[in-house]
Length: 202
Image (cartoon, rainbow, N blue to C red):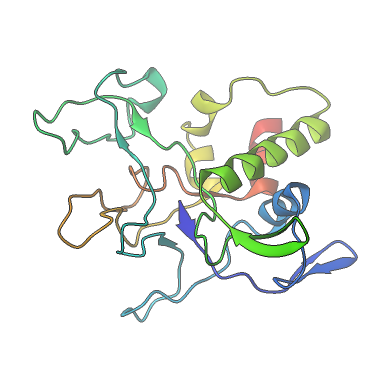
């Protein structure tokens, strides 16, 4: 999962501020038009999106399955061996990512209180909303999208590749590193919804 800084984002005739409540459809709209917001990584002179990792036990998941084999659509993704003893090779996860940082994720209202939340519980609805909007624009359901996401040029056009960071939750623990292309921290990257729609409509 990626970490981004929320800023005021124009969406149609309205502006979304990080100080207002975001619902899942607004989060999906954000991904639709603004797939990632630049974040200046610590100790780096570059601007980009980084792997979410607080180094205090809270970091993105991801890795390599020891149960499920590498699926056909990941054949060219260069899925590494598992970091677990035995180093088996299997299905790489995740396929894609979104902003999962609990500090910069999505502002929601629960029982009258505004909170910021993140994690898979925030990113999965973002992706569900994005796919629902794509289905609506296409006028039909796109179905099982995973094999399509890995095809060229979609895998490079429709995602912002996250190449900085790793998912080792502590400095002493093992983790996978982000890299160019698919990786076990952020998959193919964060979505560019408009480009993904174009690729799926081609």
